[in-house]
Length: 348
Image (cartoon, rainbow, N blue to C red):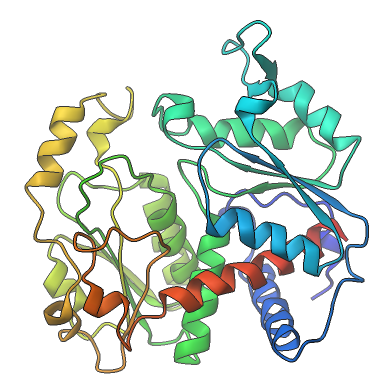
């Protein structure tokens, strides 16, 4: 397809992108990965370009893959800690001499660089579901350069790209691939929905046989579930929901167990701001763990995936994440290549 339409486009959620556009990103990412493997440089693609990275939350893979990616494309990434600048804030959330309205930050950075990437979820928006996504959308509204979502409370589109890129690498095809996105127990209840929601969107868009598994109380966004059902129909795949982890994993080709927060943790009107109720739901489901016995229920050639960091001994045992079926570290590496593809297409 013609790639001129990518130039200047925001990357906030896969819901804004077509299947054909996503396939173009995956194709370019594969080309970048192959070239990188044999030492070919592509630092001529974004020479002297600047990416501003605003991290309200901590990061290992996201920060370093974006920084390395910009260097490999010939540009530079600026790390911006909101606590060390005037923290970008939405109208009504300003604090004198401490914050600066998002509209002003976006317009200033637009005069100085070529894209803005943002990670924000949870505490910075007081666990108001959708609050951080609205903040990132507000950046996109005011900025004259692409805005890239490095994870909000609703979506993590770059992780989803790495997920489906890894599936295609390992399985060779999306058709007929059973992709199980399952909740798994963690001692921490503060886990955003962004990864599972984006993963099932991407897998459904590609036409996989998608199963979402979770205990009751861990429901995901109705808008996301409706989108997955629609994508599955259009791509001749399937999308189902299960409340039984073992049943869901039977004959799976991809096993992706990951903790996410229970609905009561959010502020009203989505939740109840009830941490005690949230903790009770988690504590009642400590048996949702990915271990060797669970993996035996999957297809013999099944792969184990995780976005990382994994809560070892809770979400997954060492023998699985460090075992031969684990592709978690390939998945982490692939963040670099899919992000380079998006940056090259949108920032060129």
